[in-house]
Length: 138
Image (cartoon, rainbow, N blue to C red; front, side):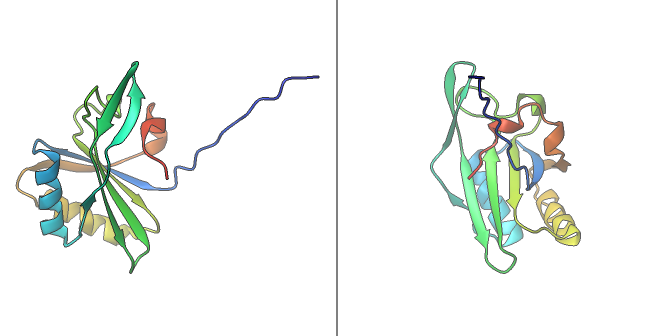
């Protein structure tokens, strides 16, 4: 009898923003809530095995019923390393799951860029990331 191989395909059906801001996660989340009017809530830390060590990363979630989108604010820096090592200069990722309008994304990006302590905000092409499987999936 021949061997069977299990092939798993992940669905990267979300928009990912990279954010550089040197503020602690709780303070940065508060600034995003204030600037955008969203209500991010801290969830249990996201844990992943990185280089034989378990790394915990802060994660905040916000669900907006009007557009059926779930927003996750994820810290790139964890207890044992970076979630996405190739994005070393990125402090946080905002994962947007659901239908996103181009003008709505531009408005959100502008609101985050207007935060005093934010250095930059940019769209990340998930398919170009080597460590894309480190991102949390629900």
